Amino acid sequence: MATATAPKIYRNFINGEWVEPKNGKMFENRNPANTDEVIGLFPAGDQRDVAAAVEAARQAFRSWRLVPAPKRAEILFRAAQILVARKEAFAHDMTREMGKILDETRGDVQEAIDMTYYMAGEGRRQFGVTAPSELPDKFAMTMRMPIGVSALITPWNFPMAIPSWKIMPSLVLGNTIVIKPASDTPLSTYHLVETLTEAGVPRGVLNIVTGSGHETGDPLIRHPAVRLVSFTGSTEVGRKVSEACAPEFKHCQLEMGGKNAIVVLDDANLEIAVDGAIWGGFGTTGQRCTAASRVIVEKKAYREFLERFVARAKALRVGNGLEPAAEMGPCISQSQLSTVMEYVEIGKAEGARLACGGHKLEGGPYAKGWFHEPTIFADCDPKMRVAREEIFGPVVSVIPADSLDQALEIACDVQYGLSSSVYTRNVNRAFRAIREFDTGIVYVNAPTIGAETHLPFGGTKFTGNGHREAAVAALDFYSEWKTVYVDFSDRLQRAQIDTGAFGQVGRE
Image (cartoon, rainbow, N blue to C red; front, side):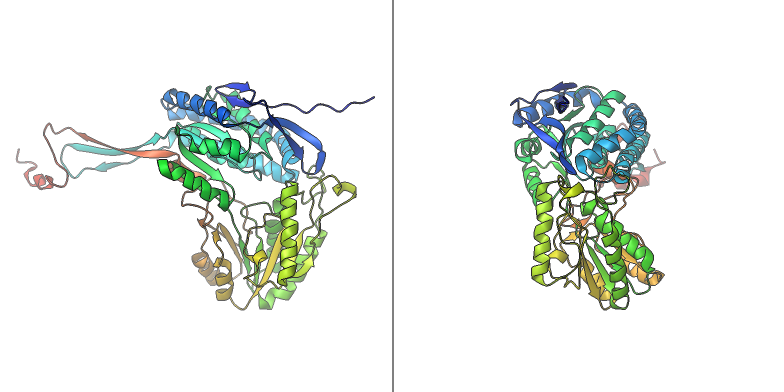
């Protein structure tokens, strides 16, 4: 008689060792496409685990900051090579724990690979500047310095890519880390930590603690030895993170919500505009901060675009992300599915026309998962909640507009400012849109999703607090500038006061 295989038990990684949580409690990580499958049991840690991890990171910082940056980078380079070799295995595990289709999880791992290689290169490019002094016989330069213990709190929708955005620049700059991944998707972050450890990251430099936001996240960001906090998640929680960091003036980076718009103008190539709206709205089941949850269409193109868009959405194949035919997976959890269903009811009550979808998928292959139909609301008023609030699911609102100016006004009239897109064949209209979109990222003739690791990522307004992820911009957040003056004149020189001394140069 066959017996069920016991789920694997995972532990926290603290000071180079895999250790049990202090309270002995664990939580289940289940497959959102098949909730009968338990991916593993993970520690439901508390503030004692956090304290131990932070202390390990604090102690490790003393030596890690002195390791030459190019040597730190060599470890990242080895980690990237390991990720390449294990990409397919890590992608399969990510689909099992997060639900998105294999093509997308492969892309998630690839983004971690790209970021790791990129930041390995920054080991030899942490450039400061030298500048002429206003005084004679005086040398001036700047240099980057590590900050200390980094607290990294990451979401479930990109469970390897987003941790890599935070871990890699922090490490290459000489900081040490305690990371708390989302409880819905801890395994992918575990894989990343194991990879870096295998590549040679010393004990105590990189630590992972799992558990709830209340029991582990809150004590982590409030710990007095933590000097830097990077958070990706909702705007509501991000505000609390900012408030917690403020009393001790901790570096705080926030990447939060989005209500991103695709603007389709009447001169657009509608075929590629529909392609973009499908990918932007239903890629990752709409569970992206960059998801295109609004499509604003000029009225001359509105009817034709809507017909094509609805037909494509109805044809999308929803299923287990491990199945080759699947084009959209499940919601991450019962809670997220319930949120999507609540917003569908809100949209109908507001008077939006349900053009397709609107229902939980049940029975057959959907019986044990959290699946929802791709859903489109048509003829939406931009003041409707479904057209203004982040849903984080497969729900798109289509809004008519009289002109480019009105479309841009609608696009900008939300509290978020992450990503935006315009479809047009008119270069003048494209550049007007680029100028007027109040977002951190703008696309022309492409959807609102698809960031590249060598360019800054982040948004305006309630989406972020001014710091950017990825690229060289990340170096500015994970380091402090130090300005150095070397006076070799053998006399007291007072900046601004003694600048008249230049007149004496050459007479002495």
